[in-house]
Length: 575
Ligand code: SRM
Ligand code: SF4
Image (cartoon, rainbow, N blue to C red; front, top):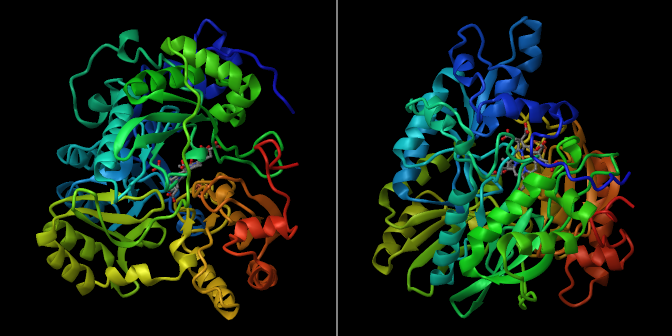
């Protein structure tokens, strides 16, 4: 049902009691302090209070419990095995080898000797116990890193293409992404006081002038992309910035608005939406544009119904023309017509490549971004050894992979030997399907997961690889993504084949996304298990092998062959 287009300003002159409970919580939190310090000190529980769990998200920290242990702990009448996920703010996914080593050490000390690279190019620690939270955050501070706004109703981790080829262009766009992130994150001193033992100040309205007391209605995401690779899935961002350049000279950005993946099954009023390109502006104006877009959502986003609070619904309710003119009036200049650009893929290009500055880069495949020593592979150790040797930087890709970036010609042989010694170079010889696959974390840490994802997709891929190979399609790149629930953390609704969890072992199957993230897919079958998934895919893949047109992608074929109708807009996704 369409909501009335009402302005629900962040201005608290609106009766707070009419807004969502989270708005009242933010309002009384004293700029995100709440009672977090008391919660951390509470000795008899591994948890923090319900309200503090919500406020801690703004500090990049999620309370979770180990779901593998839930039933057993309940039987033993113990509280759940509370633990915390901590997400680093790492705009554009770039970190130095020294930072890598410190992150690795913290993961081994407090995070279950595992790290998770995310779909928005950062690291997550899982399994951190309450007494170790402060030590973790302070350890990150020593590595010049923080977790500010990695979650919460604010501007989240800013993404940036990892482009290993166009060195100067990447450096400039990355720098802009980093500055944008610094510009739009909350400025409250709460983080320093609580986690870094900073001096306590009296909270005042001057503390967070852009956000005000109630921050944003919901999370808000920026991403910068460098065509022709749409690795960040720019159309899935609340605000996407498409670099427009002449050669390697950055001129400015096309801006697209209103993307998002979140969706609830059987709730037609929620839907994924792809961002619309609304204009072009010169690069010098980026911070004004970023601030104006953020404050428009601050002022007009829905603060009553959180299921309708993402920017994409503000855009659909009020219209693109309204947004463009509101943006222009806030920044004081007009957007130009969008400039031409073209994407070819949203995947990573693996192996060695040489940047225009002559430096080398190696992109390796890390299945679903999980780093640990397990199943006979010493991945965590290998990457630590690499970090000891490497003098350039690491770039986490938006597809959960890793680039060892900026290797000088003279250092390449040592790095290559190290990659070979640990088998890291062979990761790139996985099948095209696996190299284009991605799964969200899901069980056992994600409290919202309804089915496995990260722990299941690898074995499902193996079975689908057999089907593809039996039809002569072993090298066919098909984007395949899985999530443990419909929230869309692995951006499944732009994949050519996607699975979203409904219940243990049961998934919705979506087909028909665009190969470079330009089209949403559509629900094909609901609530099906592995046997049915494989049977259905076998039939479709067999036809694809025989009937595809020259270079036709799988996602285009399933639409032409009539398996699903093309989705033309977010609202059309469930029609
Ligand atoms: Fe996400 C919530 C993991 C990228 C849409 N996401 C969660 C939580 C925090 C669960 C929760 O709220 O309790 C998950 C923690 C799981 C765990 O144990 O670690 C979680 N999201 C992730 C990550 C780690 C998935 C991954 O496998 O890499 C990604 C972290 C990104 C980062 O570094 O910041 C991650 N999440 C995304 C993306 C992809 C993106 O942004 O490009 C999306 C879809 C885009 C979008 O925002 O629309 C996404 N996550 C959600 C949603 C649905 C939001 C909505 O509009 O309805 C939720 C649920 C919510 O916010 O209520 C969610
Ligand atoms: Fe959890 Fe769902 Fe996100 Fe997967 S998609 S990490 S199950 S919230």
